[in-house]
Image 1: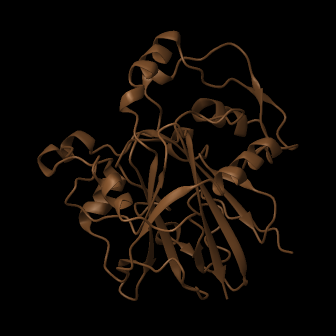
Image 2: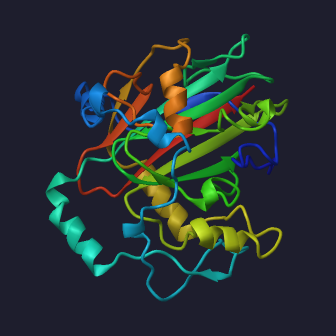
Length: 314
């Protein structure tokens, strides 16, 4: 069994995406109200973020109100990363604020769109169930309906998982997402064309990408300065391998009940608005293109949502 790992260092280490074909694994049958519930929290067109205000790009570091840290440390790593790092904790004031806003909490939602590169070099919407061939290129665009934190894990042919986002070499190690500000991986603004796409190589197999969206930082997983400093400690420290307990929780959440809406409008080119929103940190409005797949938790009590794409390459 191959143990090649796909690193979302935006392919800085590897220019190819090792295996492909996408089969979605998004839970229960679609419901008509899911897409509407997800899109209703997008801003009205007149309220859209000003391009000049976001020209510097998206901010992936968590807000100052969530950056207070409590004394203590936590181990990371699943056997290969044993160093302790400090992790974030809520202040008493912030906890009280969360309680006060409890009635306004949104059900967690995650939108996902798969793009492939066509013969003209354009990004076009791709069918998540298709099989990919060597040389084809793909990119994923994510959108959430509430603020939170994104983690991406990868397994190759059923092998051990590794965390490929957050990444010490991307976004200053941050992984904070603002609601309806899309996130693309790899980035279309990477310095080189080969780094802007995942390219399927000549090896058949299956890559599984686990997108973990949470309201709070995951325990025992460093981010921002903690992640950067941890990875500097020596070769082999990163990418981080999640602890078995955390990975079991992610697997459990993957099978948790969710409501799903899917679109079959494939082949349409990505709009300039979508690209600008993801690369400049702009919020999408109700009139902008919708994600191909939308998942939503059934309860506002849920604090984690997990989606998985299996990429089958033949």
